[in-house]
View (cartoon, rainbow, N blue to C red):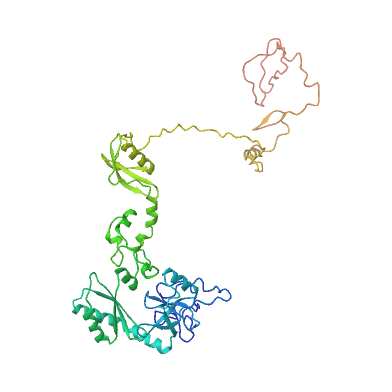
Length: 461
């Protein structure tokens, strides 16, 4: 990752303006810039109280992750990203300012450095163009010098690996970083390298984690290595950290690019240790019950659940809370055995209860504003039967619609007739149904009755 204005890949500044050359952030970049182990200066936009002098120490970054504190003895106006010339042993070195102001005081307090110490080296000046040109030439020699030094180390049969080379800004000194499993006598190597490159040689041994941090790379999680982005203190990682977190002890999954255990195994270790404090130790303890003996299978730490299995049923995992396991262990210590691992709980029968509430406050119905839906059958009946018949008597049903009885204007009409229910001797009583046809039918002459409806004889011949 680099800024657009970065020409060397190590700094983001220009000597002509003295300001950062990439994003023109004037020392308060929040994106990180183009170097490793960047620090966001959250105090850059805050003004000091009246009469408070600016802190005279600054932090300078060199190749990769090497950083040192220098004192600004000349009180130069400096910003983050400026290329400066600082004191070195011997000569001078060229670096880039990473932090300035009050944030440096906090960094020195974190590193247990005394701001009033006389051992702090001096900052000479802002780098000139000739200093920057010489610094770039020294950087271009580092890659070829590293391969040449590896070849010389192989010829001398030294069990070491030269992983990186860093030239000083004035090209008078070169630092060789190497890794080795055992102690190496490199006195002969220093003589050969000094004659080969005509510079002062310094050898520094680093660990596998520091080597991975200097080289960089992408981890198995898909992100850039922590040791090359933000991690500065490398703590030892043991396999017990993986055991506490219930991880499989697979070296292919637990090892990082450096070949050691991953540093991220320590990130959540404290949370697991706090959660597992009150868990009983059951590695060599078996639970005795009346049904049989049970042994521990696995533990879910954050759910506070421990899984046990009977010796005759090893595939049946029985989850038990931590309190239940402690109770069984105490019972076994006193010579008692529970009937089973789990407590049998008799659940009461479920009885559905009707809601018991009253309208004590006088709430209105929730559907009081809903419009009633009119049935479509009324409209269908009107279409099927047509308009009402005015000649029909009152009270006679018209299809599905009943006609109400209209009041009778004649009061004598509804009076009962005494002769209405008397039988007529001349009337022929028959059980045959009445004929509702409109055509006339011939009458049958009854005895004692005149035949007024006699048909005249047919005189036509």
